[in-house]
Image 1 (cartoon, rainbow, N blue to C red):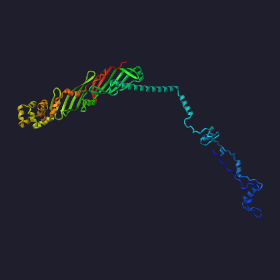
Image 2: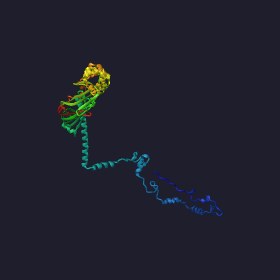
Image 3: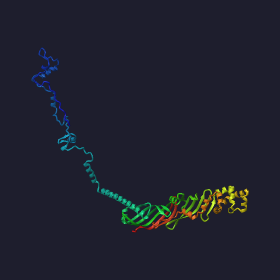
Image 4: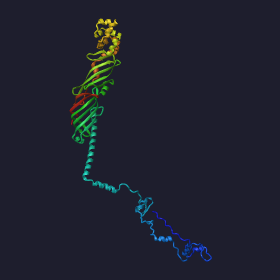
Length: 464
């Protein structure tokens, strides 16, 4: 701290004790007195400043009454400088007793406002104050968390290894999804026996179709493995699951994007679509009934098959195969005189309509007789029952007059039921590699055909 500057006391202009300021500066009157004025103060000053009388400064007299001046306490308040002040100012130009820069000349550094060593010692002291039982509980909890994490990591590792092994062994296009149940897992590894494993395999090839998804729940699995690095094989005590044959896959694989399959009852599937015949699309409709074939397959029985030339004729293959007119087309023929006479001109057709040759002959010449036949309530229903298969081959010109393309009609009559049924067959067999698995129940759901699977004592790879 900078010391205050002491102000000197005022001194007279003439310091000599024998000098008379009145003589040097005042003028004398005729009586030897002073003519400096009529002020009494001037007379008193002259008396005090007479020769032989010393001069006393009033400020010095007051100063003698005050306490001695202390440079460390210039204000006289009894304050003392803090020893740390000079130490803290050492790096900023302060001067301590040990020289510039602080104690022993060390460079100045900012104070540490963080947690002091005393605070750290206090924290350690608090931890020491925790009871031993609480410390043991905390330690056990930490070890338990580490053990659980290690167990879950081991499960994930083994699941990935199992997925890769199954994909390779079964030659699957897509890796399966393996989920290992049970806790803790590491104890199961030591026993080489897993409680339960769930496996979901997508897109499994099965004959002409693909199984959309196979779900398997295996229980009591005995491993032949050097876990967790190697899995050589296993034996499954019991297994259950299901397989889905999705309609979406059937549409793509069997219908070639032209036939759609949908549920129609608990065990039946309806197929609707189009089939190209002689350059023309004809409508396809059929029913496929699903049933179990042995323990490992599903068979299909196709019924109600029909191919339609929209609004004109319908062809039904099979034992009673036939090409017959639609009611709409038959009504148009009954109203068209030319078509009706052309139809009655074929004796075999007139006979199938139940019209004798003589009335049929008169109808070709007499409009009244023709109207009598065609306006009869039995004519149109009878005409829709006439099988035109033979007429197509024997009288192609008549088929054309009736509004049917002879080429398309001829191509339709060549389709056989087995050939058409094969196009809509939903049958499949379980893959050969899925040994020990059996199909138990079969059902039809909105998204596809579902079959329940069962199995026991199934081996995979090298048995333990």
